[in-house]
Length: 119
Image 1 (cartoon, rainbow, N blue to C red):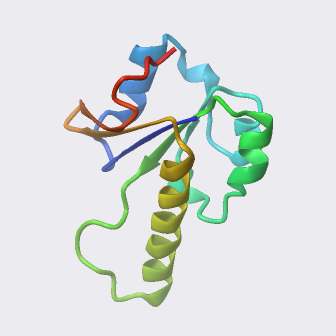
Image 2: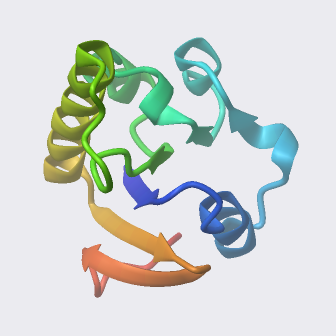
Image 3: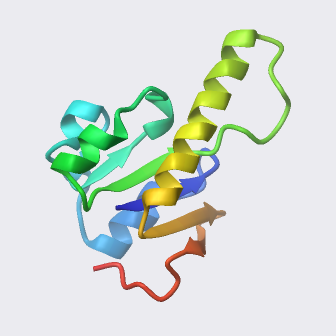
């Protein structure tokens, strides 16, 4: 599994599509779709994602998640809880991932798996 993180509108999906040669039709936007497609974009919308079940059926998936923990701390407790859940999910995913990259302004920074090829 590969984990791609970065802020909103930083070019994460474009980067993955360019690196892999996949097209937008091969991108999942729900956990159910992610069981059969090679890319799952919008992981941050699913903080209760059962990563064990997903990776059991699709171990080579590329997960794309917006970073949500940077910036102003929300006043709303529900928003703080959501950010906490997404952060913990990303920590679990990063631990399991063979490769982790952060995309900033369309530029990749490899955080884990620097010597591993994409394919």
